[in-house]
Image 1 (cartoon, rainbow, N blue to C red):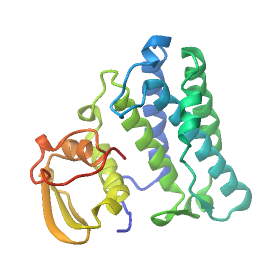
Image 2 (image 1 turned 180 degrees about the horizontal axis):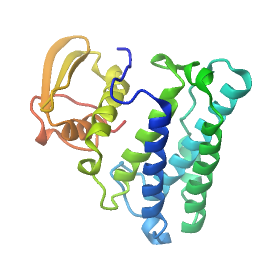
Image 3 (image 1 turned 60 degrees about the vertical axis):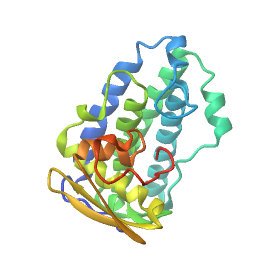
Image 4 (image 1 turned 45 degrees about the vertical axis):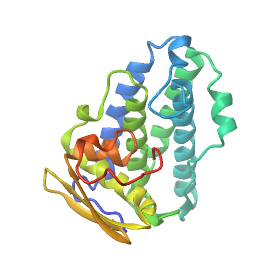
Length: 238
């Protein structure tokens, strides 16, 4: 499955959404105490401190990829994963250090993004899904910030996402989840009128609102709010 969007197709628009989402995240986390950061999240075995550490590492990786694109004007390989031991070590920090890591990594990332031009945005990035335009780096970060903000359980949920962003993130996460459907040809139909088919194998169909399907496809919500997913196992969050 290739990835394309017809909702927002300009990196500047995604950049503005990312700025707003980052400000909301930092506004909610700044009040957390050391004990608050140790609380559980929607991600199995991950504390809030683990999520913050992951987000900071992700921003640093995006910064590195962006700077390489600017300097070489050649394709880079997508790098956003961290080793578990790096997450656990970073999660030991206190509230001030965790907030600083989130804030500073985001600030440096935005400075790097500001240096991108029309040409570098079009350079392909090598990923496990095949080549993708560099603009998807911003989309991936936007998804990370919004979904992990929900993971923190600070009163934010999928229903709080703007409708146009819900569909955008739904498309992106369906694309990311496609490898999970190697044994099923899954047709996804939303109440709002969007549909797509991914995977190969036994035909299956799921239906629901875009908000419910986004929560389900990311592994944060069970199948109770959508139709047809009872027998599908997504094997954890993405």
